[in-house]
Image (cartoon, rainbow, N blue to C red; front, side, top):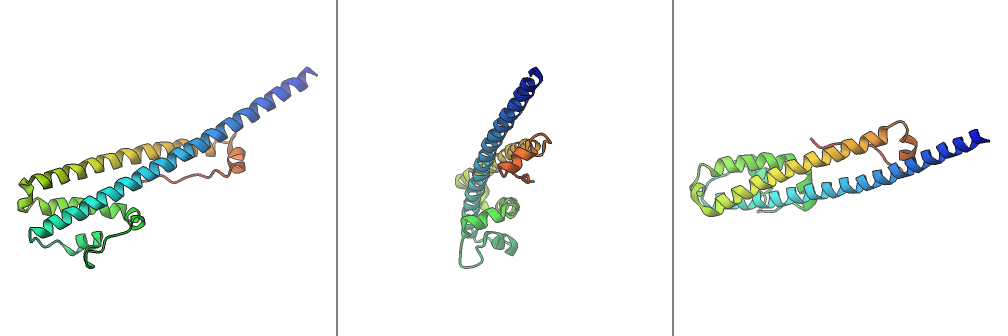
Length: 168
């Protein structure tokens, strides 16, 4: 009789902790989605600043390299990318930022206050982006740990929680 009660208590505690972990995993999943949206927003804002920088450089009658124009999609009648396309080219955005800043440093824009403010904004966005990627990856590693933990694999399958891939 006592053995049965102890077994029921252990089973009850196990179910309680499984449900508790499952709800915490759902909460962590929402946090990951929120961080993902923040990264998306930062990339979109950085893209807009790069378009502005490219236009400033072109106003100085400096010819931009074709690969930079192609990255910004400015070669096609100044057509800009949609927000979904911005997210898909995140690495190109970062490389384009470095290229545009390098080109701008060789022009008379270097001493203009407008350029310096834009450069500082780009640097701030880059720092914020890197910080958010690190935080997102930490959350993803924690999430994947609990989804993969052998005691909670069944709970993760019941709640349809699958492993996530981290950003590089």
